[in-house]
Amino acid sequence: MSSLHSDNAGNVHDVTNDHLDEGVDQEHLSKGLTALVDKSITHPDVSETIHAPTHKPEKHSILSKFIPGFEKLATRYHVGNFVIVRGTNERVFESMPIYARIGMHLLFYGKEQVRFLEYKTVEELLHEQSVKEGKLYDSPDSVASIPSFIQTYSIQLSELLYPEISSYKTFNEFFYRKLREDARPVQNAEDPNSFCSAADSRLMVFDNLDQATSIWIKGKQFTIPNLLGDAALAKHFEGASLAVFRLAPADYHRFHSPADVIVGDTTDIPGQYYTVNPQAVNEPNFDVFTANRRSVLLLQHQQTNVPIAFVAIGALLVGSIVFTVKPGQVVKRGEELGYFKYGGSTCVALFPKGLIKFDEDLLKNSLEEKIETVVKVGYSLGKRIGA
Image (cartoon, rainbow, N blue to C red; front, side, top):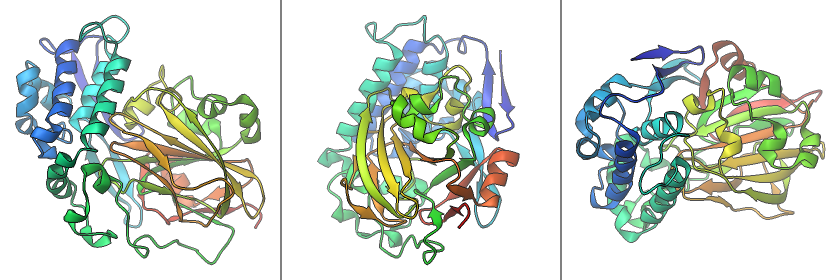
């Protein structure tokens, strides 16, 4: 028996027993996810495959073939979450893409008991399909998916450094597209004590770890040492403030420096490819941020010489994380640090205790409304405490 539930964080999700609907089991779901990935090239309309919205079962002809009763599943689990658009305060409902919905079911229902696809585990399946999707979208044939992707997500070509579709030789090249230099101006650019948004994203900010884990990041495994993969480094971030930037598939997928910094070393941490949708982040017995593959980039804040940790976290169907800066390089606020290849993904910025005072509207949305704020690169994030 299942029902929809809207939680305090604005997420709309299903409350389900530890079994799926009759006729929708793990093996069928795994075949459905595999079919979505395999059809990425032969069926280039992304609105009918990878990015089909959960609540429109008529767009799922491919999945209906592999998942008995899929129309019922898609209709019942009309899931997603509300976000607040900064500047207008408009609340917008964002439907979860169907591949994320399938990933959620595979992950949280029967994960420990059920093996499928010749005894592959859920983790192996999601890893396998994520790597496969990255390779598919690196192939020349993948350019056929670009027009439907632009239409599905109403991407503004006028913002792009290269607005002509013919400029891109693969879908991935379009996915990590560059913008014009003037497309993302930095707010308060004249103030060296200001911080800015690192990504076009849905943003949550917290003054400390206790706020983050009581309101948003419910996974019991989430700690600063686990996130950074380094207990000694984590000591520099005791009591740190956090900014969580969640990038949806349609977003511009390059990420930028939130402050004036000197680039330090990067550490890659192996992990899984779970969805980073808020419903997964809000799961109390599981933490995607410390389970997923991620890269930790250390930055030295120029005004104070204290460290900032910038963690790029991969997710379901993400091909790879690429940093475009090198150790010792000086990077100004709003300048590029790197990019994600195909897929949704997240960046977490850790600021040492006492460094940043987040903007009041961002704190209000995060702490009181318990809802993400839609921001763009360069938007004001906050100012240095005591400056």
